[in-house]
Image (cartoon, rainbow, N blue to C red; front, top):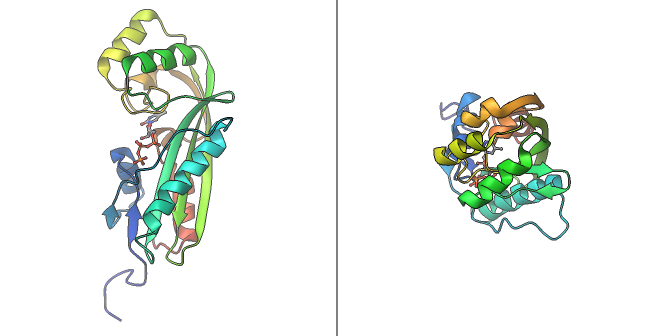
Length: 198
Ligand SMILES: Cc1cn([C@H]2C[C@H](O)[C@@H](COP(=O)(O)OP(=O)(O)OP(=O)(O)O)O2)c(=O)[nH]c1=O
């Protein structure tokens, strides 16, 4: 009627401060109308396992933005690194990052990224992508130079597969984009199910 393409599609809000998530959306041709970080408490609940933790945080981020933006499509995500039942922190200090790298060195671990979308009618949908990875045994000098790179800062589990640490990962089964922060397969399916035209 008004001539604008997709004029019946509600505006999309990315509830994230992560430039990686914006880039991964752009990779599948999706440009959000707004990017608004959702500030929530990300502390795990006592006894919470990595997968439900990622799911809960993605839901809380989406819900937080939905309160003042009804009628929009809200997309949020959360990435968690798990070793067994243990949730690794999003590393903010060198000590935390060293502890994570020592723990991951030579170990199998899992990265869970939950994507949560609330559609224009307020219906919430979520999917968790689960990826199994193996990191090589790291030498002390590999750990030291990775710490010096600062690439671990603000990343779940103290590493980013898209940077230097990519060369520490010997095996990956699952979703590479999920490990980076937004699994594009699950995201596209959720967007389509939520009435977003792409
Ligand atoms: C394991 C891994 C994590 N990460 C990042 C993805 C996420 O940005 C971060 C985990 O923190 P998140 O809490 O998922 O996201 P965020 O705080 O960066 O952004 P927001 O909550 O506003 O959406 O770790 C990588 O970039 N590469 C990796 O290989």
